[in-house]
Length: 289
Image (tube, rainbow, N blue to C red; front, side, top):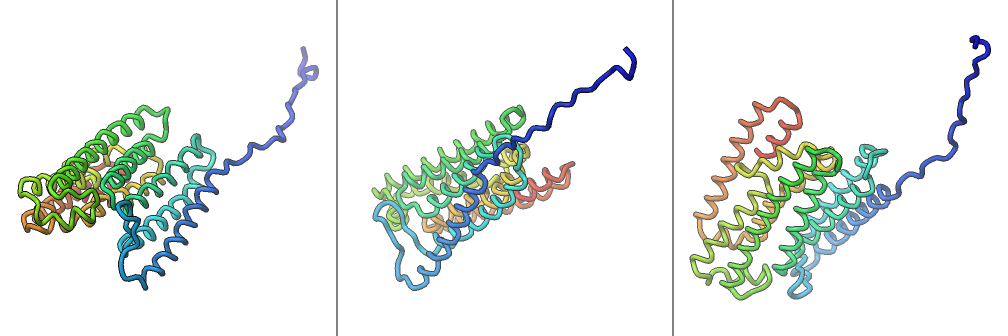
């Protein structure tokens, strides 16, 4: 066969375009709507005397609406960025569903007054974040990082359960507001158990030293998930200690424990940063610090 006799057959270009997934746009708009609603609630709170409550379930005070505004604004920014970053990637709809679910769970957490609701939101927050860390399902390292994070978050939820059980037994209250109001009359041993468990639960969730390994192993997460983690999720420990501040402030020793733990983590986190060979590892150590 000569070169002139050869023919090349070219298939026609496909004219069928894959429809773009709707989840990114839908969940991003919903998040910004939540932010707008939070701003409205914050404005309404300016003229309110006391918290808005569903007795025994939720209590919306000034701190709650401030956290709602901050959480939904940051989540909206991350989701808007994710629409470009995650475009064309596998599992994009699952990612946006998880990210929106994370926003909802945190919003429930900061408003919850019933101890069981607060604990359930704390547990769900950790499990959703672990799922985001392991978003790339066919990457063994991502799956291993998700398993490690999940173990830490389950341990944190277990510690929180111990603290809530101790406070319930000591005060007879099933709400956070009732527990903190009556904690002054709690037996010293139960109060100490609750304080230690609360501080450790906060330290695990906030990746303080020596509980920082889950954060340093989570670099397999997509960058938007890392943003939710580094600038949002690790602040959960602060929210926890703020909600239970009356329990911690009963004794200066408990406050000293928090200070020492935070100062130690700040120092060691900065030292660990100096030996990290990659930018994401340095970012993780900076978050620890």
